Length: 363
Image 1 (cartoon, helix red, strand yellow):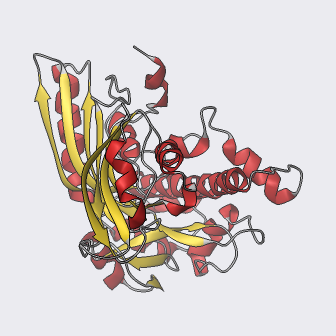
Image 2 (cartoon, helix red, strand yellow; image 1 turned 30 degrees about the vertical axis):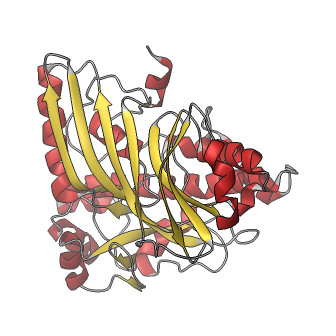
């Protein structure tokens, strides 16, 4: 799928390769831990390991099953990441002689409950871009300013789709009954990749439509977008780069209830980051868009059974985003915080205005 980017500049050349030195993630817990209870909470740092690999290593050392170890989110493999995990407190003494070159226990405490997926507020990132010339550095700095002011699309990152980018095809085949996958975890992963593909396709289409609204006069728009004139007029009045369509499913930001966009008041609230637009993760029992927004969404709503659906923010607002150019090294270093479930590589691709997965194979 060719992704639509919203920033107006031309593609920027730089080198980015995920590594523990150039890609650092620090998990932000959803709540403070109580300091007491039957669950041992470890603050761990891992390098060049996926969260699943780390869990396997620890479970083998402790002699327990992987499901006994709780974690809030999956962290990148090719990175240095810090996150919190939990395990039954009775195994604390077994950890005294634990050593692994890729895992370091930074701190420990206790809590009443096991950490579960989703129990995090977000993640703080440090990313270093390399081979950045002064001209590119100015363009990167300007892009950061725009993202800081306007936010960015909340695409699923390339990590969701596998090395060849085609895991979603297996998910589509599993749902259609033409492919069997005995590993339930892997089957779920493929189906989720298909949901993510549909979401990304919808988001890319909506950004394309928003750019058409920005770029064409009203009389020209009537020939390229099949909406009533009053809807096109309402979209033209919106100052935010992502144009809302009546019937869109909105969500309070950064979390909260769902409701449909009906009036200009929601447009203003979106610009003020009080609410944001959501996209559909196609499946059963999910809230759908209505009216004109539904006419766009239904093209990407192809899952009616086999998995539950949900809504996901289509647009997010990174926090504490800042950048520094180190001309002598030709580096541009960026710090920022994203809500849970959002991809740092998507921010880098928005700045670059191109896919950056291919940089992984470069030296």
